[in-house]
Length: 152
Image (tube, rainbow, N blue to C red; front, top):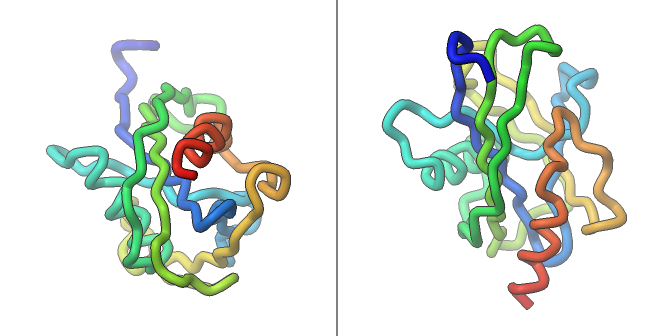
């Protein structure tokens, strides 16, 4: 890792409801692939607070409980045109409410300053129904499975 390239702090949320994982598509950017909620940690913000904030902003789900930290990875974006490294912290969150099977949600204030983003969210059965996730977001799915086993 180069000391001259910035490291951006990110969080990734694996949100479950029973044995299902919440995933989404960008309605206007299908080429972005299927993802899970994720985003940038603000300066001075605790990563656990950031993952709850990002999850709410991207899903609209208010009934989310932080289950556990799953791990972290450093991700190099230079191959994707990005100038930086990302330190990603992965968390398991549980939806305690009764969410819809599928819905659309608009993130009104993306952290990159872009126009509002519309997400098409839906649940995927863990583990066999989880589609391939973009941007190496599948890195801690095995840890999520272990976390789900502990919650039984």
